[in-house]
Every structure is written in C-alpha cells, then in structure tokens.
Image (cartoon, rainbow, N blue to C red; front, side):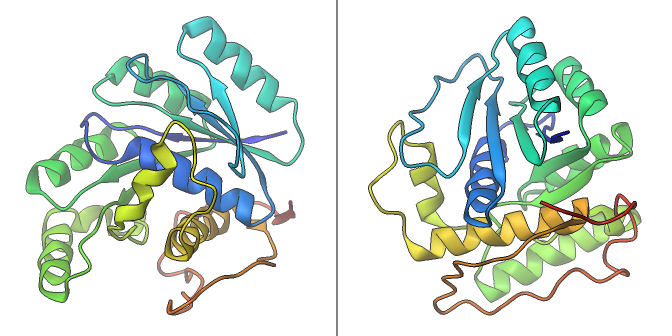
Length: 234
C-alpha cells in the first residue's frame, strides 16, 4: 500500500508546490516510485515528460478521492499531495488521510507564527524550513528566530531546504532537457530526509554530490517523533 505525504499549511508563498515537486523528483532519483498530486484549482497541470515521477490531477473532490484510492492499491509507491494554501478545511481533510504531514515555512516571523498555529492544529505534522538563507549571517538570524519562537516544537522541525534559484525549473510547464546537478542534489536531500522519517530503506545509486557535503542521517535525538514500526525496503 502506498504511503501518502501531504504538504499543507494556512499561509501561501511558503513553497508547498516547489517542495512537493522537489520531494517527488528526489524520490525518483533514489529509485522510489512517486506521484505528485495537484489539488490547487488555481494551477494548471504540468507536462510529465522528463520527470522522475508521475503527475496526478486531483483538483476536484471526486478526483482526489479516486487518486488517493488508486494510490492505496499500489505497493511501494509514495504519493505527495500538494495541498495549496489558505484552505483550512482542505488541510484538515488531507491531514486525516495522510501518513506524513509537512508544513513548510520561510524565515519571516509571519511564517513562523503561522506554522506555530498549524503545528498546534495538526499534532502529527512536521514543520520544514524552506527557501532557507545560505548567507551565514542571515542563516544564523533565521535559526535563532526558529529556536526562540518554535522551541516548544523543536523535535518536529526537519532540516531546512536551502534557497536555490534552480528549483523554479521544476515548476515549468515543460522540464528542461537537463537539470542542474545542485538541484538534483537538493531534491535527493529532501527525499532522503523524508524516507528516514518514514523508515523506508533505500539505496542511492546515482549520487551527484558535486561540491556538496554529505549529510548525516537524522539521529534519534533529532527525530523523537519518527513514525515507528518495522523498517521496510522499497
């Protein structure tokens, strides 16, 4: 039966769609079978050619039910539902049907205050910093804001997804023939982290970490809310 991940949150502009496609692309690069599910009625479906994952259009209530029901019948698949923004009732619905819930947020205090409310509303969800600054001074300021305002939920905060201009390529209607190596590395990093949380074993056979330091797996201290259960190969 497929795992279902939803990317939700009450604030727009936090990178939910970008994160959804990065995660699916990274899962594909790690040999996982993934589907990116569109639910935002304000967006048009993208062209699947060249992507490492399939696309599913679930912009109506009936189509969402059909897509989720179909995914649940597929062994060793992962469905990533892009929940869109500012839709609390839809967020509640997606939260109820998902195995893993992600709440992306950026470094602004408004984003942090909003994700704090969402963490309290959705107690099984993880917050994930997105478009995180890479400048050391900005990064330190952002990290200190998170520590101060989200300290009570520190064990539900995943590693940041750093700002990378090439991520916008994933949201083009048609993918370029070749994606930059730093983008592939960033997508892999996101996917690895989420596979660790889901406790799914994987083998990274096509690593392209040019100039990137290898990240250590999440420790038990960092991830006390791991989903638990027997680790399973995909």
